[in-house]
Amino acid sequence: MSEIVRVLKTFVAYLKRPDLYPELGRKIIKNTVNRGNAFKGKEKTNSWAASKAISQQEAVTKLFGADISPFRTQFLEILKQSEQKEKDCPIKMGGPGALELIYYSCEFANAKNVVETGVAYGWSSLAALLSLQKREGKLYSSDMPYLAQDGDQYVGYVVPENLKQYWKLFRFADKESLPKIFGDSETFDVVHYDSDKSYNGRVWAYNELYRHLRKGGVFISDDIGDNSAYQDFCEANSIDTVVVEYEGKYIGVFVK
View 1 (cartoon, one colour):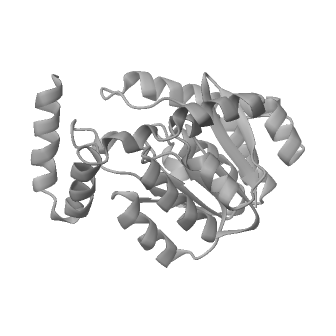
View 2 (view 1 turned 90 degrees about the vertical axis):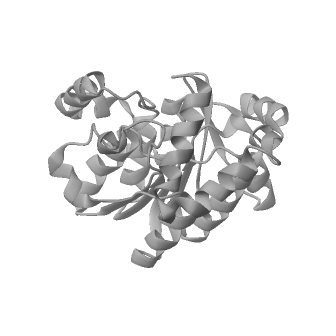
C-alpha cells in the first residue's frame, strides 16, 4: 500500500467515525504544524538512557526482587499458542515486548487494577492478564482503531478467550479512552504506556496516568528513546527511574 493511498484510506475511515473526530483534528495538527514534536530531545534522551540502561532481568531483580526465568516455563503452552496465533494473523502489528517486566510488575504490586495504552496483538495485555487472573483483577486498555487496514477484529488477537473476562478494552484515542477508564476505576496498581509516541501526547498521558497510580504502584513506558518526554517527566517530578534496554529500544520503569 503506497503512503498516499494509506493516508487517504485512513482519512476516509476517520470521516465515517464522528466519535474519532477529536483525534483526527489532533493528528492533522501533529502532522503539520507540530511535525518536529515526535523527536523533540531525542538525542539528549538516548544518551541519558544509554548511560543508565540495564537488562530486563536486572531491572526485575532490582525493583521487585524476582527472577524472570520461571515465566517462560510456567506459561510455556499459552505463549506457544499465542505465538502461533500471531503467525496466523493476516494483519501485521507490533510484536511482543518485555513481557516479564509487565508480569512481574503486576505480581510485585499484587495488582487488581491495571491500565495500559496500546494493545495491537495484545502481548502486553496477555502478560498483565496472566497475573491479574490470580486475583480476579481487571485490565483496562486504550487502543485506537487500525483505520488504515481492516485490523480492528485482530486487536488483542493473542489473548486467550478465558482471560478476556478480566479485560475491558476502550477503542478510542487516549484523550477519549483514559477519562472513560478513570470513570470506571480511580486508582491503579500498574500503568503501562505504549501508545501516542509524540512528545506532547506522552507528557499529557504520563501526567494523567501518574496521578491515578497508587503509591507503591509501578509505572512503565515503552520506547522512551523516541523523544525526551519521559526523561523530562521524571526530572520534573524528581523520579529516580530505572531504564531497561530491550531489543535495541529503551523502556522506563519505576515504583511510585
